[in-house]
Amino acid sequence: MAKKKESKKSASKYVENESMKNKVEIKQPISPNQERVSRLVGSLFIGLGVLLLAFGVFSYIKFREEPLLDPNLEAPKLVESTTITNGDTLKIKGDAAGYDNVFVYVNDQKVGEAKVEDSKFSYDYKVDNEGEYNISIAGVKGFPNRKISTSSEVISSIVDRTAPSKESVTIKYGEETNKDTFILVGNTEPNASVVVKRGTESFDGLADKEGSFRIEGIALDEGKNVFAILIKDLAGNEITLDEKIRVTYSPTGSVNGDAVVDENIPQAAGTFDELIGNNLMMIFGLLALISFIGSSTVSYLRNKR
Image (cartoon, rainbow, N blue to C red; front, side, top):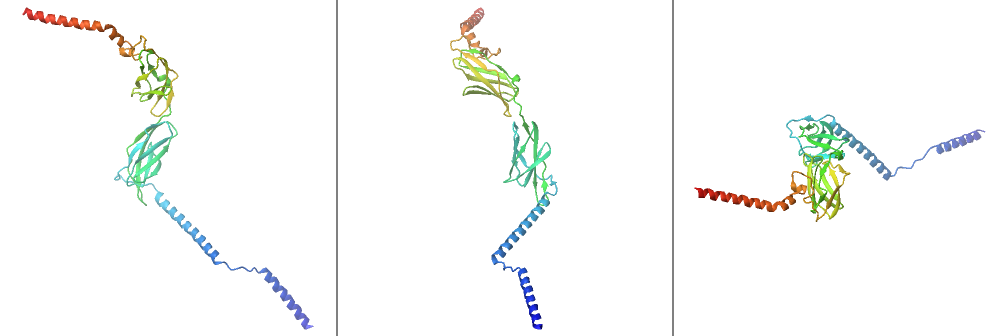
């Protein structure tokens, strides 16, 4: 009887041991290659973390406060800025030798900064509205304590998106001529360009500071000639007048001159040639008569003595 009990106990322990073995997970050892890759990835992430931390510290030190003004520093030179435009960008360029960056100011407000490379810098300033923009710059250098120079001289830039007024343009010319060219005079916006066009031909002129312009030598074909006239201001705004220029050229016609209406210049009014042609003999006759009277008077006075 005792032996049977022992055998039952042994069987029970065997079953328990087998059950425990089934619950235990047997892991294979990690290969050397996998361990090496894991260490490399870990090191990479640690390195990136260190770089990010260093960059954060650098940025904080460099930009934690505004640079201190040093009046002894020479201001950089603002070499170029868009003078006048109808676009949306002002291009700003200059020389800033010895500086790391340049602060850009528009109407006394800082609008951005540009990096200095090879002593040069450039910056594009976007504008929304028309008007005048006063631009200046200042140089910045040093680390960790930055210093800034005094501001440069101010350059003004104008944004003009308004085309010249058609109603303000006046033109004068003669409608008939017997010459193969004519002259156009008129008035428009000061310093504007004036272009007279017919097909592929164009004749240019420039208005002065008061808006007056004069274009000479505009070629004509025999018969009726029709030209368009374009006005472009300094900013690039352009208009084409509704009114056309119409001039008739007849080589055998009786209207002389360059077909310009200007009472102060007989040639321009088409009368100078006619005056000379019709009265040339009379003029010579008067000169001869005056010479004869003068010489006779001198001879008489000598004989009287």
